[in-house]
Amino acid sequence: MKRVGEAVTPLIVGWGLKGAMQLERIRQSWGAFFPGPLTVHAEPQSLRDGHLSVTVDSSAWLHQVRYMQTKILQRLSPLGVKRITVRVGRVTPLPETGQAAPPPPRRISAEDARFIETLTASVADEALRMSVKRAMTRWATSPHRPSRDSGYTSKDTE
Image 1 (tube, rainbow, N blue to C red):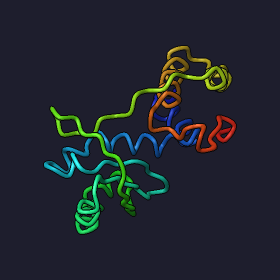
Image 2 (cartoon, rainbow, N blue to C red; image 1 turned 90 degrees about the vertical axis):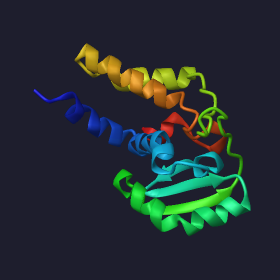
Image 3 (cartoon, rainbow, N blue to C red; image 1 turned 30 degrees about the vertical axis):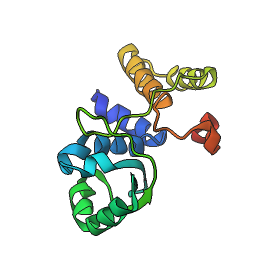
Image 4 (cartoon, rainbow, N blue to C red; image 1 turned 120 degrees about the horizontal axis):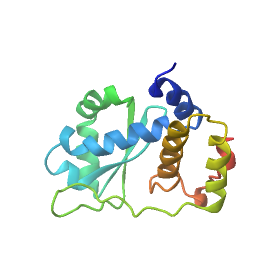
């Protein structure tokens, strides 16, 4: 009998969730990797094929992050980061923690709910099926998932 991790890993890779999971790990440990003002002025935005995009709130921080790029790559390489791109944009810090505030969660669409139901219907083990459904629902409602405005549809993962 396979362990859950062995059964779920191919599903995560097949659904394109591996990068999203790595990005979430980076976000959760951002403050631990880079304590101090960097966490207030910079936040990871996306991770694709080892390419991490970071948004900073000013051109001064753009130059600072570029200066620290080698150090950042060393610390994040165990999480799959091979390259970094930095751009100026909106970073929303939380005053109490200094961590960037996550965007508000999205509601799951009827189309995504049907998609998740269809993909998990063939999983015989009830506990595993429910676990995969919860993970996919979290992904579908994640504020960091590409929006439909960017041209993403659930058909892109079929």
